[in-house]
Image (cartoon, rainbow, N blue to C red; front, side, top):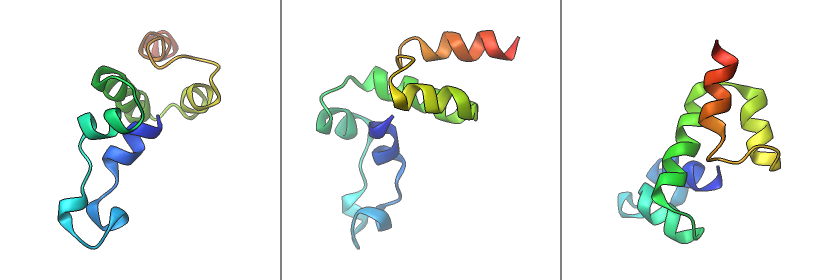
Length: 75
């Protein structure tokens, strides 16, 4: 979840230069996770499910299991 937050920050949040924008692969590398994990975390974030987001951030649900949890909750 941290990597997707880093990747989603506008450049102005990182530095004064647009060159400071961070891509998903760069954010993944910074935190030693895969780009797929960042993409899954983005889906969790985009779901808007505050409880699921909190559970992932707290380590109660893994990023890899979160999409299935989101689907199950939306049924």
